Image (tube, rainbow, N blue to C red):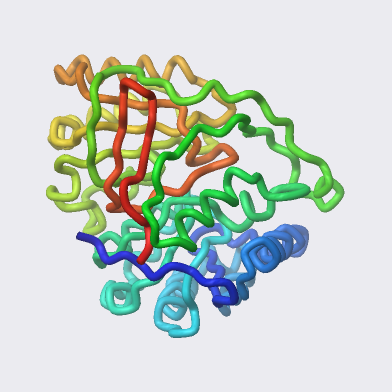
Length: 343
C-alpha cells in the first residue's frame, strides 16, 4: 500500500515547482503563472510559494536539472509546505533522476500533482512509496482563460481537500483542446467548448476493480529499464490509466507501446484499462483500432477498457490518485474511485 498524503486545508502553503520545462519564469509568460497563482489563492484559499529555481526561465532550468531536483527535494522537506504542484510539463524531467533522494520523499509525504512529463515525478513518488495525484498543472488548468472550469474545481476539492471516498467520476458535459496563444491579450477569451460524448466501453463486460497506475504513454517510455519502472506487483490486478500528449502520437506508436506492455506480461495481469480523451479527438477511432488490435493479438478481448475519459491533455479534467482502488463498470459506463485520495 502506498502512503496517502494529508488532505489540504484552507490557508495551507503549497509549493509550485518546474520539474521539466521552465516556461513559468519566462518574461512573456509570467502573467500566466501569476494568473494560476491567483486562482489557487482565490478559489482554494491557499498560500503559494514558488520554489527558488522554479521561475528562473526555460534556458536556466534546461541547463540545470539538478536545480529542478533541488527545488523538489526542498519542497518535500519544508514542513510548512503541504502540497507541491507542477507549473507545467515538458519533455526531460527524466534528467532529474540522478539528483533525487527517495528517502526524502518517503519521510515527508505530501501531495504532489501534475500531468504529462510530470509522470516521471509521479514515478519518483511511487518508487518512494507515496501516492501522488495525476491531475491539473498550474499554467494550464489553474490559469485557464477567464476562469477555471467548474468540473476541474470540483475534482480538486473532492480529491485534495476531503478524506471522504472520492466516488463516481462523471464525464464532463463539454471539453476543449483548442490552442490559443498564451498572450496576455487572449486572457479574457474563452476557449471554444464542444459537447462531450461521455465514456465509451470499447470492449469487455461486467465490473472490475483495481488500484490505479499509469500516466502519459510517451513519458512512461522514458522510464522503461530504469530504476523508476514499477515492480511487478504494482501491475497485478490493477487498473491502468493511459493518455497521450499534445504531440498527438501516431496510432502505430500506441500500438507498439501496448505491445511492449503485453510482452512484459503487464496486460495479462491487470484487471482493466482507462484511456483519456485524445488531444483534439485526433486519431479518436484510430487509437481504438490500435488498442483493440493489441488486445486481440494477446487474447485479451474480454478485458474491460473504458475510453474518452476526462484526464490528461484535454480540459476539463478529473484527478487520479496513484494506488487508489477504483471501479470500472462496463454495464453502466461508470467509473468510480472507491476510497479517498488523501488522509
